Image 1 (cartoon, rainbow, N blue to C red):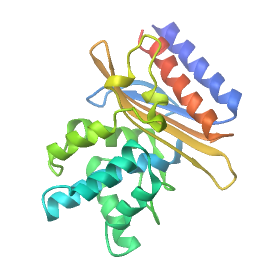
Image 2 (image 1 turned 180 degrees about the vertical axis):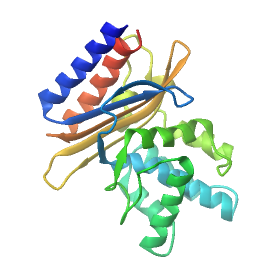
Image 3 (image 1 turned 90 degrees about the vertical axis):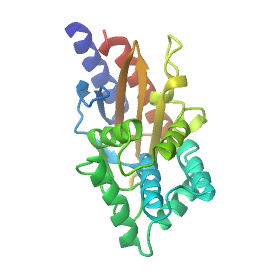
Image 4 (image 1 turned 135 degrees about the vertical axis):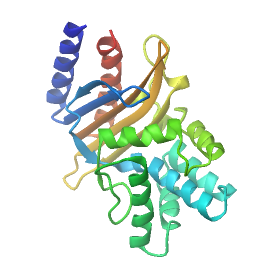
Length: 246
């Protein structure tokens, strides 16, 4: 097993070097215990990963104010999370409060409730930095729930995170060679260029293999193209299941 773990570490370092990007991988079990970590300190712009915390914030506020999501809110969240739509995400963010500061405060309250340590909204959604451990804190909230979230709405959100839309069928959402993975997985992918034109590309999600839940966060920064980052994220997940779970 140790030989396989060393081989996995070497393969991940090779991938990172080949594309000239920073690459981090953190895998935990359903209870938050670390199964594997490779440069988990790597951070990047949250990009579309922020669409899940934004959906959870919309759910929290709906529960506090009216009790349930409206059909319009569900339509916006479905487009934002399932299809990674940006206009719907901007609409959801704008509905959080009367000012940008109020919008930030509501989203940041949700990050705090989930146990995210360093991820915070600043002037909008998606351009703030995030970490693998914070993203797995978000995922645990989606999977296990919280007393400030209605379970019926949360169960519906989990269905929106099934990787059937092409934007979500890479990384954790990609089918694996043994035919397992995608159908029962939850996933949110994200990608965004920085000011220099390099790409931050991430994949976060849950998949179950052999009765064990794997909560996976692949964060990458500095890719030459979004497609390159997506291919690397898919390769990283494949390598983990080939070498990291033996």
